[in-house]
Structure formats: C-alpha cells, structure tokens
Image (tube, rainbow, N blue to C red; front, top):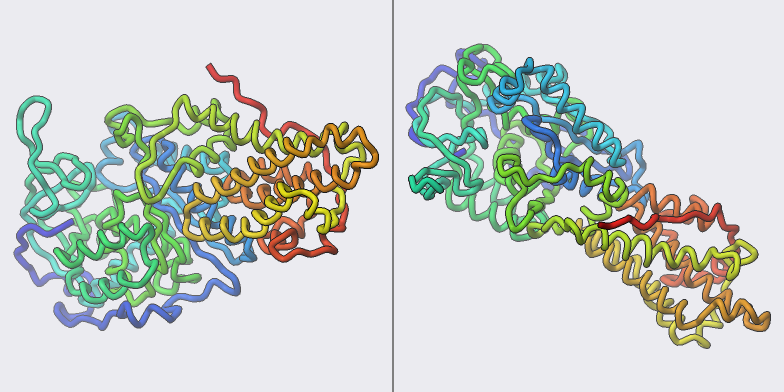
Length: 570
C-alpha cells in the first residue's frame, strides 16, 4: 500500500469533481467523532452493529472464513441475550467480487466472471445459513446498490480535495492486490535457490511496477488516526492496536485508489474516467456503508465492531478510518482482529492445499460440533491449530460425556420419576459442603463468562462453562442420587442434587446459546426452561442474587433426548 515514486498531475478536479485541487474540504477529526453519532444515524435504543469482512470469491470458503463469521455471530447473539433487540441489530457479511484475481480465477475455470462470482458467493451464503450464522444483510460488491455507494464515495473524496493523480513506480503484490513500500518488502530465497522479493507481511511475491493511478491523501490524517488508535479498547487484542500505532508512527504513505482499466477491467469504474477502475479495497471497505443504507447518510452508523483477520488489519485499521475521516463520517467504535488457523504450524493456504473444507468437517463432527470446535479452539490473540484427530475426542468428552451425561442423570426416570425440576430450600446447602461450593461457583459464573464474552474470548467463556459442568458431575458422583432415590427419607437431599444440577445446566444452556444455539435450545427445551429464563439477566436468579421464590418454583421437564450423540471415531 505504501507509495513508491509519484509524479503528480493536476487532473483530478477537472475529471472528478468541482472542488479545485489542493482546496480540501475540512475532514471530520477523530476527536470530534469519539462522542458523536456523526453524519449517520443511531442504531435505536439498545442497538448493535457488527460486521465481518466480506470474503474474496477467488475460491471456496474454508474454516478460517467461517471462524470470522462465527465470532461475529456469537458476539451478536450475546448482545441479544443481554437485551439488544434483534430489530435494532445490524449484522452484515458478504462477498468481495471484484479485482484481477477474481477475473483470472474465472478464466482459469473457463467461466464467465459474473457467473463465477454468483456460484462462489452462493457457496459462502449457503455455508453461513447452514452454520446458523444470524446475519441480517449479505452484501455483494457486484450488486448495483453497492456500486452506487462506491461511486458516491469516490466522488466525495474527489470533491473534498482528497485525491490527486500520479505515476507510480514501485513494488506491487498481485496476490494481495496492494502496492508496497521498501519497508514492506524483503528478500527471500526460493526452493530453487533463486532470490525473490516478497511482501514482508504476507510472504507473497511482488514485482516492480509503473502506472498512472489516482491517489488518496492518507498521510494527511496521521494525527487523527493516532488519536483514534490511542483510545483504550479500540483494537482487540491489544497487541494489534500497538501494531497499528507503530505503522502510523513509522510510515503512513498516500494510498493508490485506482488501477488502469486495461489491466483491471473487472471492477467499479472511476466516475468520470472510464480509463480507471476503483481500487478493490476501497470498493470492498465501502460495503459497510452499503449495509447501513449507503453513502452519504448511513443509518445506523458507526459500526460497533468490525471483525477481521490479522492479514487485513492494515486496511481496516489505517485505510478505512482515514477514508471515513475524509468523508466526514464517524469512525468504528472497535476492531476485533483474530489470528489464523494453522495445520502443522503452517497457515491454511489454498496454494499449499492444506485448507479444511467446513462442509466436510461438519459432515464429520456435525455443524453444531464444528461451531463448538472453532469457538472453543480459536483464540483471537494468536494463531490456532486445527484439532484434526483430537477434535472428535474433544466433542465426545465435553458435549456427549460431560454436558450430555449431567443432563441424562438429572432427567433419568429412575432418579426423577416426577419428570420435573424440583424446588430447593437454600438452607439445605449447609448440609452438603460440595453442594455449597458448587452454589458459590454458580454465584460468580455468569459474570465470569460475560467478562470473557465481552472481550470476544469465547474460548475462555466456554472453558469456564464446562468447568462448572464438570464440577456438577463430581457433585452428583459424590452425592450418589441413585442411592438417595431408593430411600424416601432422602428425598429432600435428592431434590437438592437435582435442583443444583438443573441450575448448572440452565446456566450452561444460556451461556452456550451464542456458541451452539441449536444444541443449547434443545438442552433448555429438555429442561423445560421458559423463555423468560433464557436471558443473561435471569442467570442471577439462582445464586448470584439468591431468589427463594425462584428456587422454590418447580418446572416440568420437556421431552427427553440425547443431547449430542457420541461420534464414531476411527
């Protein structure tokens, strides 16, 4: 993205807009946007706006794409559990369908480009639907509504005096579709023994290139970007925020925002200059405006969270906010950047042929199982190894044995012949040290899980949830309800065991709704938990804020079934 050598030509004002070149319309500052709604509109009371990156359709989706979507989905579902109204939620995803790589992929497959995009975009959408990703909008960059947004954005940049034209001579990475400065490339020895210049960030080959492009004066926004980036929690995990601050401090070159149309014909043409195509990343980033109703008055705005992979951090953390500053729009409230999935220590790559097909994985582990594996095993702060053979054992151990076993015990007719969740006298807890310890754990568990979920560390929240379920199983094992059930005098003790176990299962069921919504819903249905007790605030009724009226209430169990059938492993 960095500039090479630029020879300026004063042609932009005449071609693209009425504002004289060099006469810049004042841009909105980062400071002025921090506490205002900006040129857009609010999300309504209790609203939430979250996005995934739009996914490049040069090939079929892999589990890395699905992981990004699941992080956003889990965050969105958690917000709704806390009271955000679904009608005030905007969760957008989609597909990035322009650029030279797309054109070449279609040609290699002997397919017309639009038909190629249609097929792969459908593949992404159908995958997300089958994975229960609850998006509210799916933006395709080939859609007319989006192309209109991109045109208006580019024209506004020109009218604001934020563009100029020049000849570029420098490094270009075709695979990343980005220009790179000297500080962003390195020499690398190839297996053949030859030396090649590659991108320091992606490791992909670059070539020396020279062409005329339109440029965006991104360097003019250095101070505003630093101000925005220094806000606490702006980018999570924190080390990615430090990385962005370092990039801004070291180098913030102007950004090339067009390509010669003779070289890149598949894309949105520059308004007023059919000889140029708008840069694919400007095109792609504008999808967030398209999802919010378009430019210049997006509603709702701004996004609460952009979810993205670390390989596109520079585009979302530098280019996108700089463009928004130039457009006079409020900047995103936060970025969630996550690592990659690896196999054998290597990043999954189509070129290496080591990607995991999510549909094949779902056929092996079930789609609910795959959701659990990705959110349980993925950690945003680092790269995550794909479990492979270990994955099935984890699902059997945690969903079938740990969670499923506790449910089976509590609903078994031999232990629970009335088919109900019995009431509980809190005073009886004093007679069971193990039960009292479990109740104390339940008192703090909802806040612990909520803290992890709010930080997008769903893996830690799942670990905390399953830890409580394991503790409940140990409690049941110690109390031996199968013995208590044979002695009528032990009925109060048996009901204590059943009710405490029920409370653990209810908390686990609600806590796992963002992670495995279908499985969690079946769990709560089996327990007969009414809708009013499937919210985050309801979790305090048990032991966080002991409510004797609630604990004295009995519930009729729903239909009994196996929660997660054990996988047959080879």
